[in-house]
Amino acid sequence: MPVEHRVAARGRLRARVVGVVAGRVSVPGMGQEGEGGASGRGRCVGWPALDERRGPLQASLGTLGQRLQPGMADSAQAQKLVYLVTGGCGFLGEHVVRMLLQREPRLGELRVFDRHLGPWLEELKTGPVRVTAIQGDVTEAHEVAAAVAGAHVVIHTAGLVDVFGRASPETIHEVNVQGTRNVIEACVQTGTRFLVYTSSMEVVGPNTKGHPFYRGNEDTLYEAVHRHPYPCSKALAERLVLEANGREVHGGLPLVTCALRPTGIYGEGHQIMRDFYRQGLRLGGWLFRAIPASVEHGRVYVGNVAWMHVLAARELERRAALMGGQVYFCYDGSPYKSYEDFNMEFLGPCGLQLVGARPLLPYWLLVFLAALNALLQWLLRPLVLYAPLLNPYTLAVANTTFTVSTDKAQRHFGYEPLFSWEDSRTRTILWVQAAGSSAQ
Ligand SMILES: NC(=O)c1ccc[n+]([C@@H]2O[C@H](COP(=O)([O-])OP(=O)(O)OC[C@H]3O[C@@H](n4cnc5c(N)ncnc54)[C@H](O)[C@@H]3O)[C@@H](O)[C@H]2O)c1
Ligand SMILES: C[C@@H](CO)CCC[C@@H](C)[C@H]1CC[C@H]2[C@@H]3[C@H](O)C=C4C[C@@H](O)CC[C@]4(C)[C@H]3CC[C@]12C
Image (cartoon, rainbow, N blue to C red):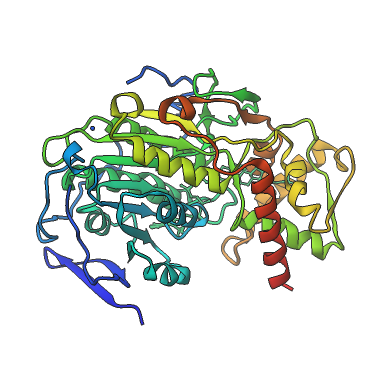
């Protein structure tokens, strides 16, 4: 039975802490390069400017236990560190959590903060590292502050990933932008100095004009113009994180932040891949090509994205001057292919076939169907949620070349992919097979 704690501060209920191994919540304790061209500092059409909607951080942190000096002093290199992963039960978050436990020798406590806690967290509690599961909402400033207090490093992956119209634009903004603001303010107030933010390629593009971004890097010039709430929210949140770099945190030292921008992540736990697999099974083993094979879509393996987060978090102190305020695309050895051809690398070995060397439907018909889906979504909204994969935005993303080619993470913090393309492919195939058969 999980132990449940309620952390009270200022008389208010804090985030629910579920299953703290040693029954304690806080273990308080505990340093630019001018790069950045594909900056993502683009325009969000029809969205509020950064300073609007700003709310004060209301939580006080007074009762959350003693605090050592912020920062990780040289003399304390051997000291065990407290990490917080927001969104730690999501697709990427779970991989980050497991990667930290496997590959971060200085890890002393791992706090996993999520709105929905996964049952798999239970199995992690038998290891040598204290794993603290915290059920909480990033939009609630006091819950975030309670979770951040005493952490040395925050990896902020929590986000509302919705390009299908399931959530309202306001909700997406609230979770992705206000949630990120709450995380930053919590770091400042509690003296947490190191923040790694999971951004997205969509901060850069594809833009509303469908311009190709062909094997670009962080300095590639690109007109970043967003209309959709999701990329808008990611761009605004990323800007908040980068602008927070250098802010003085409680204790007087500067906050060090960076943002990682994955392209389309794939791997174990990727729900859209599983949905395509199930759809193919329903169609008798066939999928039908809709996008020209010549359109390249950037993809990166989840294990490598997680590894990049772990390394960035580890190196932020030592390389603060270089890494602080920087953005990094996430990359590995995954091949450049169209979205559908890439998926077939996994779905093919699972028995599916992609029909057609060229798209079976003319592009104008796809545009029409995508618009029809959007109209139906709007008409049906009062009655039922209609949120198919195809809509004008997803069609534009799938149909616009967006790939990265960079070594910035290698130069700045020594990142090399942990998983080869062959490993990433095999792991993903095994997962698709298992996920598909469990659905039968
Ligand atoms: N999946 C991709 O291809 C991709 C690509 C680039 C960037 N990203 C970014 O990576 C991050 C993780 O994405 P993912 O694909 O793992 O998504 P996901 O939905 O699987 O994970 C997000 C997690 O955040 C949690 N969460 C959502 N709202 C929350 C809230 N209000 N409070 C606390 N927790 C909340 C969810 O419960 C979930 O566990 C996101 O920030 C996303 O923008 C994802
Ligand atoms: C036209 C269909 C024919 O088969 C294919 C539609 C595919 C789309 C549903 C997906 C194509 C590209 C995906 C996005 C991309 O990989 C990058 C993303 C960034 C990330 O931050 C969130 C997820 C996503 C927007 C991802 C979502 C699904 C696609 C649009």
